[in-house]
Length: 492
Image 1 (spheres, helix red, strand yellow):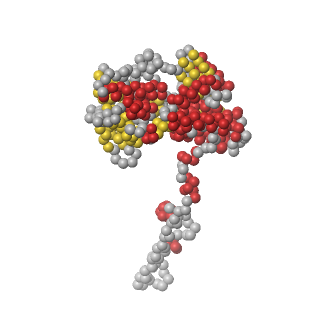
Image 2 (cartoon, one colour):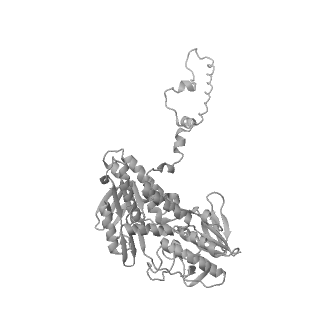
Image 3 (tube, helix red, strand yellow):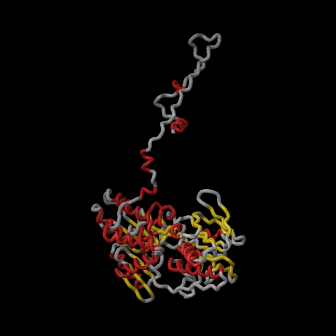
């Protein structure tokens, strides 16, 4: 029975394995999926998770719960040698091992792409994982609690300032959702006012949201301005050292904004793990594939190797892609995975493959409770109806009815009960409370060293004359003297 190895369990990997289970006959092939995480993250919901509208666990899909026929391996693939059809699998605990395969599907996804800007690696947080979205929510709530106890001043302003870098869909959505969240949160903090909160979005280009029309993007800018959010176009983040953001405009002027929450959403790049493979890569680090999603080296098809999603450079046959390639988004990743699964099964059965081609259905974004935008061709919809379309589309796109109902339940609960505003920031250090009050064994008592006896005076020495002095430790060290380093270490 041939073995199909799926590398990665995100959108593309999960859907590939899920659809292979559907299309393969009993005993036709074994499917193995490897990913360091035990779940797939539905990334379009991350802004709503950050804003407290969706429970973090409800925005992920458990691999083992929904892949009934797939062998799920929670580990990393650190090397692929397709020449010998082996992959090195490295678990978090234990020794690495070599896994052989007959067919391989590369769906390792993407990671945040950053630039060597001082302070970003130390101060900023991304928005690619569920953990990041949950941490952003908790940070906002914790900072509000801290700020409510402070007088007006620089420290309070710092706690109540949010800076988002990147004006694409992810950046605009999390920026607008957090603005909505904070405005709603003010009702629970009478010590703070709307004017105490500050929102800044930094975009290097002259516009936001390139997926929608210029007119629609202008409407979004106007809506954000009316809600007290500042968008800095043609502006770059020059430094973020110590949380002090230096915003450098196109005219070389610099504005300084100090923030305790800097969110980086300025692009993604293919997972660097593909560099540990012998597959051909294009200049942006993605695996080159042909339209039917088989890996290709220029014009030569590499047998038994497939790739799709953010880690693959998939030709866009509609002519609408950037540089002739499909843009890295969820809409393409899910549909590519479905087509790849069909093509792989067709190949096993000696049938013809079908090229991937998908006409863009449009773009939809949520900008906070009751506000959204939708763009399809020249048709645009704004406001409440677009927000409803956003929730309707993504609610149905969430894999499995089990996950759909959990998300819908969060929305219904939020409508009637409001958002939960309890911060769980201390889960970053869950043992802190236990350690603070835990009893520890007392240090073992150290025995006093025996006194050294003074030698008898030499012959001929008069009684009482001075001789060699050998003081005991008790005589040599005062009780009030500070202990030496060695004694500190012993006490510890």
